[in-house]
Length: 325
Ligand SMILES: C[S@@+](CC[C@H](N)C(=O)[O-])C[C@H]1O[C@@H](n2cnc3c(N)ncnc32)[C@H](O)[C@@H]1O
Ligand code: SF4
Ligand code: SF4
Image (tube, rainbow, N blue to C red):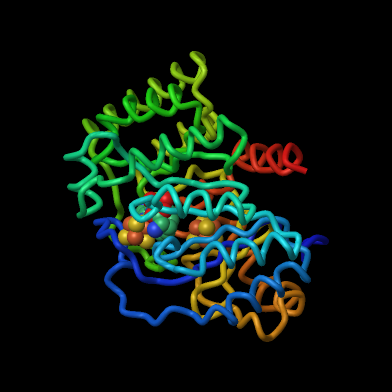
């Protein structure tokens, strides 16, 4: 068992969504929102367990009216808080409320600045997604808001226009993290299944996108991925598997808690217990140890959730925790 509790816990604060992404099935589920008090209990349990950073996700977290209250509660309990959002409902007032509540970082999911590409993959118009990015970047530059980064999915839909997204991030001085398209959450299995594999021509386009991002980095883009990670991502997109020597650290440094309070090693693997059973108890349980050692072998077809744990992303997180005190 790792000596320390996980650095990061992702918490799904609901499963509803206002988007219709083609690569995500969450929006199609009909699941009741967790009660505010249950989420508060989860945040309390995470704080007591010693987790540093809680990442609020979903579904689309900004659809909860009590999101600023949840952020405020987590901060008062000593947790650092990041929010992953599609930004569509992130009105300027809500952004200011979240900033006032102490939100540390906002991760805006945006694969392309091209309106047609956005709509074709996300199933809804681009709407406020771009203005949210500039609003949040403006607050960040005034030192009045959370750190801003973009999380972009690299796949056949976005490779062609990735360079434009990189240019925009550089202009706005927001960090950009890329993750390759992977199988929808919850569909990983250790049984062989159809791979998401891009053909040779598509891979060449994706390779150009990676090279363009690396050039933009040398011109000032704050890229959250290392070169090794990005080339590993190309391998993943071509074969559906992570490079042979990769070891998944998900079981050491993070945990995922879904909208029902189920505790998972990562979003794609089955629940190992419930928050109510005690996080320290679960973390040190034989079932968790077994899942952890299987995860280390990274034998999960079509998964690249290790993206969240790229070495450079982790150091960026540590850096920003240090900066903000
Ligand atoms: C599940 S969403 C939840 C939060 C919020 N709705 C959003 O989109 O930011 C979290 C992140 O997962 C990414 N994501 C979802 N499905 C994916 C897939 N099949 N491959 C790669 N990334 C995916 C999204 O782009 C988003 O950045
Ligand atoms: S990726 Fe996010 S925005 Fe898209 S459907 Fe899934 S939960 Fe909604
Ligand atoms: S590779 Fe890691 S993140 Fe992906 S399903 Fe396996 S354990 Fe989870």
